[in-house]
Amino acid sequence: MTMQTAPAGIDVSQWDERALLLLGVLMVENQHGYQINDFIENRICRVIAMKKPTAYALLERLEKNQAVSVQVQQEGSRPPRKVFAITSLGRDLFHQLLRINLEQSTLPGFAGDIGLMFLNYLSPEEAILGLKERRSRLEASLESMDQVPPHGPILRIDLAVEHRRAMTQAELTWLHDTIARLESI
Amino acid sequence: MTMQTAPAGIDVSQWDERALLLLGVLMVENQHGYQINDFIENRICRVIAMKKPTAYALLERLEKNQAVSVQVQQEGSRPPRKVFAITSLGRDLFHQLLRINLEQSTLPGFAGDIGLMFLNYLSPEEAILGLKERRSRLEASLESMDQVPPHGPILRIDLAVEHRRAMTQAELTWLHDTIARLESI
DNA sequence: GGGCGCATGTAATGAGTTACATGATTGA
DNA sequence: TCAATCATGTAACTCATTACATGCGCCC
Image (tube, rainbow over all chains, first blue to last red; front, side):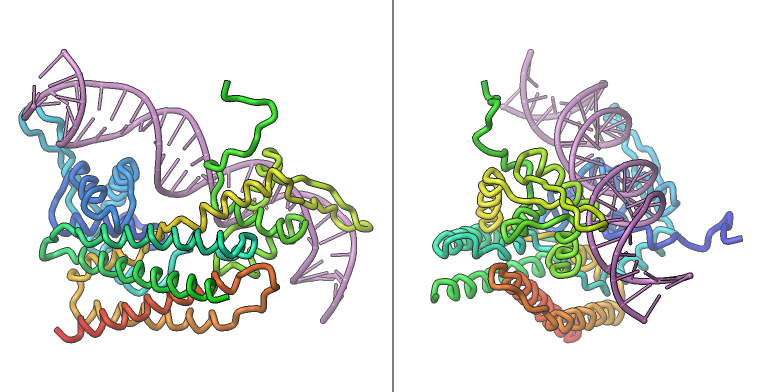
């Protein structure tokens, strides 16, 4: 009674931001797997880390759910391409996932917080030295963010990068203050 | 030639911050699994999320590697307890993991960044509305952080919580600025 | 000729979560 | 007596990553 042969939509709950990402890049234009993966691993690797097999598998799952359609293309004797296109069902899913993603506020877990809890088990000198090392590494990664490749007019990669930069800067500020506080004792 | 029957230490590379956490709580005092899990799920659930079976399994693995030792205790007819104690090998591992953890600077991936990239696929009004919802949820979680349970003198849970608060505050500030920027167009 | 880029996948591995299983004690 | 707490675990499931497999075209 809850099952229908022609569902009105796709159940949003079983998809996450990875699906949003794949659907999103297909909103821009039809692309084949290699292209999509290239974009993820090279263009936006600083924003999200998704590996090749994961992308391929998810794409397949999206196809099974009729969120995307596939068309095999052959150019000369090159390897055949599976060109994916977003369907109307997929567009609907995309918009729902996008709204959910925008509204969500869950900050991730910071693995570095564990060490902080046990700071007293190191000598003050060692603790400060460790945090200073963390700080200089963070500074390096902040500088590497400045070389952001240019982006097209549709995707707001700049927003995501800016956000990461802001968070990194905040982390840096906190580290600076904390080191100063530890040194003043 | 690289193998030795009596290893000088434990290979650090196969352990992460979860092991550091378990070893760390055992640095404070000997505890049984239930106690450790209770601490993790109730006291510091805002800092790290580790589930019961994960903790038990890791504890077992640490024991196999002689980082902790186990002693079964029975109090009356209550369920028997497996009381874990950190060994000298474990203490060594703890200090190495602690230094590595302090020095590391890897910021986690922010799932919310994906949505930002596709902001242009929503109307400006919808986009702003979504981000405002994200902001108010974040404000709520910031307020809930103020009720921090008191901590003992050894563990610097306060540092970890402070850090999370600082990052949440930074996220809030960025959101505020970004919303203002979007509204000004 | 050799290596890299294109283009698709599969298989094995590992790690963590959910749900389940057990059984005694304690408090309402 | 019923639920919650104490105390330990196992089994099944999901999910992502690493490494592997294949094969053509292009460039040095």
